[in-house]
View 1 (cartoon, rainbow, N blue to C red):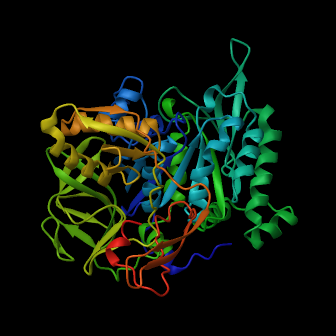
View 2 (view 1 turned 180 degrees about the horizontal axis):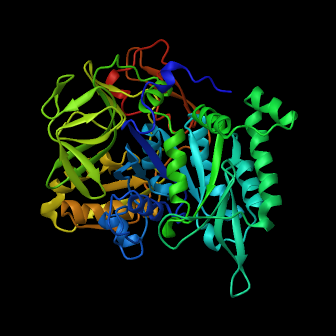
Length: 534
């Protein structure tokens, strides 16, 4: 069993008010933003649940996201749940916007991987899961849209385990019944630790019900498998299982907490985000098991000796607020107007979707936007010693797709250059280049959709309308095969005359190595002004 030492719990206990951060990630269309909306509604952060289809959700609030019905950048929202402060980071699901997802994962305490109940689509989780596991980020897998799923949970679990190096731990089994059309629908679940059954409601907390008799054998088998998995890390639990002694629930909860925090297990929960089903069970699991900020800082090897330190993971440029650096405060307290590392901290803003709420200070664990700290960019840490690069912050993948840009109004060409600098600072997986060979201005990114969103930002946020065309091919001549020529030159000019034995060799070099001229003249005198002509 993982060692729960003093350093592990110094950040606080559930109910202490300490601030924790959760990243909601998963493939496109897995339902992350709908899940966030239900979390905000269930915790009382909003009075009415919005809809991604209607464009009324807190997440995906940017114009570019609303237009496409998909996330295009990190969305931030903070809530209070049972006395604890939480910030949820809803990240884009498209692989073209993956850098934002990795940046959010770098600063979170726990990740919730949201997936659809389809074994065939599980493989789309692989890039995120590999990143999370390589960095030992504690994570929960939330199987979404379970209300209408007919797939067997056992098949879903097997598909997930095939791509995960961690032991997956099923926390619930679904309660199903026949629907009027002859299919099956999920109407509730059994919690395998508490051994309680719940019936889903269209909205609100699930109702506690009597355990259905027909589910008892399946529940007993699933619970046994859960306990056997936990016993691999706890000898006491293993002995109790061997001796057929029913373990105390407190021991099971403790093992869940310890092994989850040590990234040895990944719990699997079920629900339907757009109906609030399973949302409160997810929140309770997060509240009980999510590590606190000091534990995460230790995992990231971030040391500050208790003084103020914040890490920027995203830059935004807004017309009314200027440059905003989204940061996680790792230790100490940031105050408005404070000078830190030679940088003056201007306004402190707490993001909630597209809204920015002004605050006077931000404590350890919080996500905050720092206004107009011009020298601070994503992947950098601000501390008393100054600004430094974060050692393990994700680097952007090199661009794989390009478009040529031209301002529709020639008077906007200078403005276009400035806007491109800001867009690339917001999203380092974008780049731009002035290509002299073809006289083109190129914008480069991770795919066609990625670049279309960037072009929309140029028009919508920076008032620079552009035309886009496919890039030209910069054709170049090159030497395909080597050759040699040998000749002699004789000329009588009176006196000694002129004589030369000439050998010229031409051969190709490796691609990208450029042009190389080698002068091998031996003996004799050749006027230097003749050599450049050769």
